[in-house]
Length: 299
Image 1 (spheres, rainbow, N blue to C red):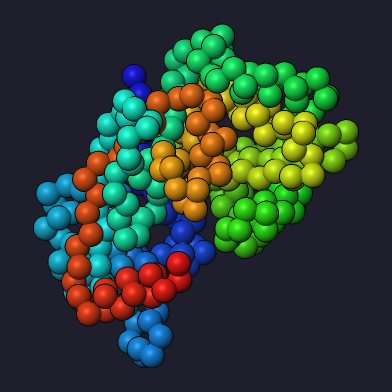
Image 2: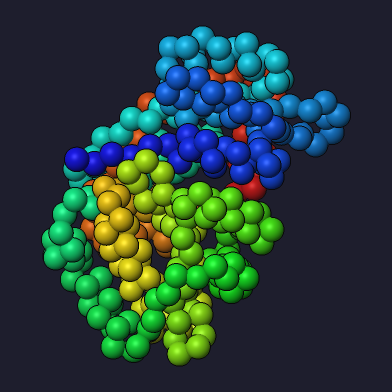
């Protein structure tokens, strides 16, 4: 049975966000949280915010207007943790909200299956690439070397044109989870050179592929495939039931920010989950219009 959860419902993740001032406040409700993010608008001296819920419950819905007024929220994003399994990956993905903490689609693996079944379910090219990495003597190791990982992450960011968190934040993120046995860094080596890495986090019965990076110079050795397979096998052996790739898109738009990484993740051939009923509540329409205009002009 496939289970997943909103990654930001993990109290240890919330603690990290607060510690690093990524959010200004967090409110805990039964089966849900409301996170407060600060917003600064050009030419406006006043400080504003937006709210994101990790699950929509009646109590949260009743409290949102009160919290919005208290924190001068321009809008709130409701992210119910409900999903349906996508039956046809050729159909259009759900409409994406104005802003979101996590993508509206993800793909997962059922770790209750045997390793042979997991391999059999993969695309044949994925199985082949795992063998290629082994043939080229790629070695995957558990590591604590965030500096090496971050060097590869910067290369990935430049290559694929996406923003990344600071090394200080990644270090804080990893160390705070690692001391609670809720994270593991893996590095893949070609001889003595680290060529790919990932950080896997753990919460409840789920392992999450949270951060990943690879050096394009070594792409022919297929290290990321063996890296993933090792993390998947370790999670299974530790008793986790689900491996969550934390965000994909089935959109055919090549400019979609998840287009490239989705091609890689979907090759493991897990079911795609669509998160349902995400909504945007607007409390300050004029300021929300300015935010939408700013987003449009950045395209």
